[in-house]
Amino acid sequence: MTIHIGAKPGEIAETVLMPGDPLRAKWAAERFLEDAICINQVRGMLGYTGTWRGHRVTIHGSGMGMPSLSIYANELIRDYGAKTLIRIGSAGAMQPQVGIRDIVLAQACTTLSTPSRGIFRELNFAPCADFGLLHAAYNAAQATGARVHVGNIYSSDVFYDERSDLNEIMQRHGVLCVEMEAAELYAVAARHNARALAVLTISDHLLTQEALPASERERSFGEMVELALTAAFS
Image (cartoon, rainbow, N blue to C red; front, side, top):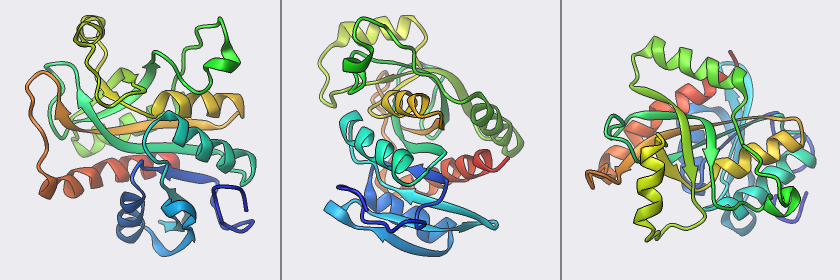
C-alpha cells in the first residue's frame, strides 16, 4: 500500500490504463476485462485489475491535471512495478482536420509547466511517447479503419484557459489537440524507464465549438480503450 493507492502487493498489473475519471476506470474494467476486481478506492480513485485476452491489466484513475496524475504514475511505477502506462482520455481538437470522435496518438507534448519542471530546472525537456507503443497503436487503428492522427499535443495545466493568443500560436505550429495529463505521464515514465502513451478521443473542438453528446461518449471511448489494449500487447 502507498499513501494514495490501497492495493496489496501483486494486485496491480505491469500494464496500466489510466483514464482521468475514476468512474471511467470502472466502466472500462467492467466492459473490457474478465474477472475484474476493485483493488483501490482510496480517496474515491478507483482501480481494477483483471485480464484482457489472457493478459493481466489494471485500469486505474489518474484524476484531473498533471499534479494528480504524477502522484499515481509515480506510485504505480515505483511501488507496484508498473512498466507500461497508457493514458486513455478525452481531448479538445485544435486543428480543422481533426474531427469529433477522431483518435489522437500523442507523439510529443507541448506544455507551459509540469510537476517535473522543478527537476529539469532550466532544461526544456521534450516529453514524448514510447515509439513501440505509438507504432503498435497506429497500426491497430489502421487495421480497424479508425480516424487517427499522430503528432504533437498540448498538455495544459488549466481547464478554463483564456489565452486565445497562445491557442493560435499552437494551432499555427500544428498542435493537434489539448488535454491535461500526458506530458507529465511521459516525463515520469522516462525518469523510471517505463513505457508510456496517450490515446485520446476528441470530445470537443476549439475551432468549431462542437462537442460530443454525453449519450455517445461511452460508445466512442470504447474504440480508444481497444486500441490502447491492443498496443500494450502487440
